[in-house]
Image 1 (cartoon, protein in one colour):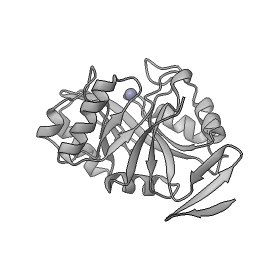
Image 2 (image 1 turned 90 degrees about the horizontal axis):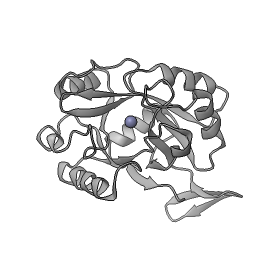
Image 3 (image 1 turned 135 degrees about the horizontal axis):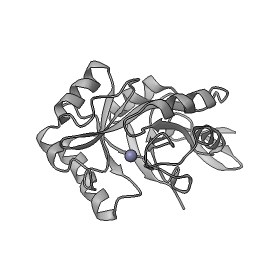
Length: 220
Ligand SMILES: [Zn+2]
């Protein structure tokens, strides 16, 4: 059943109600193609299709896009889900994620070169867990140009680290996004981002650039 909820349109089913003018996307998930993760690509596609709320995922394996291509293949039969290509790489200042690209930036190069890489391919650069090990920390304040968003909600980070990330997003005027950073099945879908977008990759990336996002911690 569809009903108007203020400005928003709400779809209600047995699982609950959700807005249909936005899509919930886990913007940070690893498959077994990451050296430190175990999730099978087929399971990502099946689980996303079965999920009552989250309908999009960015596959952000360490230094490879192989997991993405497998998830995309397994999700081909599911018209309601969106699979976003992405990759997480270390730079000399810390980790970054580039979304919307089909190749990876140079490993362990400068942050500036990762920014240039993303720009040249119309990708969106996200700063994951800035205040955890491997995070770029306050470097984001010095080099905010070219950064697309700050990950302000990561279930693997402490509350304090997430708070610092939130304040980094505010002071740099960058959108704050959330993702599970799942490496194993039990960590999947624990955080996500509500995106005011149509259910396709281009619309989602555009909405992130335009700050039409809200980071959400999944209810236990
Ligand atoms: Zn990660």
